[in-house]
Length: 112
Image 1 (cartoon, rainbow, N blue to C red):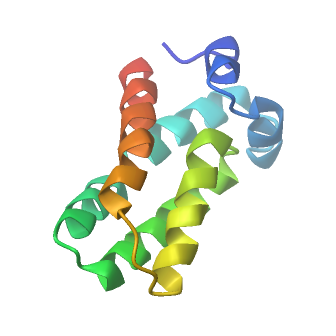
Image 2 (image 1 turned 90 degrees about the vertical axis):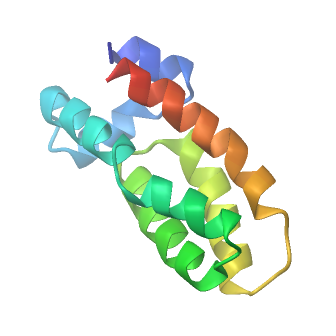
């Protein structure tokens, strides 16, 4: 179950996230649940595996916005890095870079 304490344990800035959700904790939890369920997580995983870096950029950029608006910093930071590398068309092991994002997202999603 999502709680403020649980989210804080994962390093999420709940104060900032709730502020962005009009100081409505219930609304924040709903938005976190929706954000973590975003279809772009799967799209990013599949496009990275297929080495479709243009589509991967679109998915990473969208996710960066979603998790950034919810102050889910532990996902925001690696997604930002992936997004910027993709934007610059840099060669990288994106699948490995995405793995911790997927693992954390899956842990958080299980709490929803």
